[in-house]
Image 1: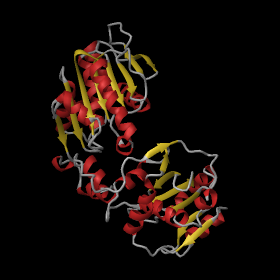
Image 2: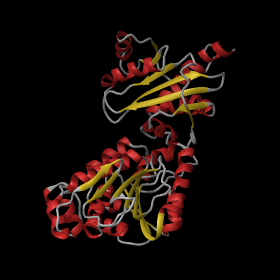
Image 3: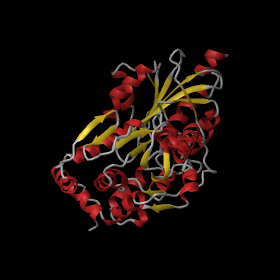
Image 4: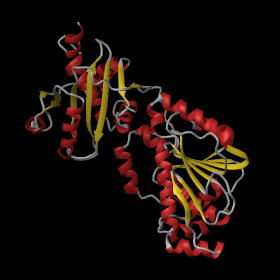
Length: 417
């Protein structure tokens, strides 16, 4: 067993194996930029961030380390986990053996950790958490590790992709001290995401797809395939990006929900068991061909989601909710009415793909999605093609546009004729 894995096992991370030691050494033990992709759930962050940082401080106690994530809060959480591990008896004894004293955080605030074994005096401590959503100028580090800075936001938002590319450029040119190393770990999300930029200055990205790693069981793999769109499964688990040229929906427009606009209506696509999601779409018209919309999903029985549906109903001042009666004989409509929500019912008899490719597709260019639309909801729409699952979000959105906004009797026409 490699030493890095032994260190991981000391702090209770028993699922780490020798390949994780290889990842740690590749990312940390270099004075150049190195990049590594590994599938979601591979213990990449556990090994490369948690164990990697502790190992590095053990042998390089005076170095200034930056952990950079998509958000500052995510980086701060990593530092919290590292500090908790540093307080474990086995780690305390190990550091005392190497440094002559038990490790203690002399500074532990604002995403910064400084330990008593650091003998040099610098503005930066032993560990600093940074996020792409914060200010990085003025910092200098001996080692920078960027983990999961490319996320689903880069899949669903062109603005997010462009911002990440700019931040990667800033980190690689201005934040890293000359002659110092950096590590870049994560998974791909979009053909034009920042991995293209990272590839330019690292030269090579090592990839560890789920098919080449034998420590994930078949049950896990089957469950992920059933509950993930084909595009995201390929990206997050096979580390490959499928062609998106045949996809109907691309580059959604985002904005801020205007609560002063009247006429909000909603649709619920309900699930009771299995691998389907519940989806709730809320839309209000801005003009005859422009809309503001927001979408949410929930994995589980719709009955467990009633409280959240009611909260969203009130928050967005929904007039009524559309629900279909084919699957549950009207029980959902009855339950929502009992919770003082207005409901309209309909019987579904249209081909799903035809419905999505007609009503949601025709409205797509005029929709401004609220920023709080959840990532799962938007991913299902962006990854939709005929026969793909899950497809509950595009099913909900297309149903609402058909039922409410496709005729001259709709609320949009009534308000803006």
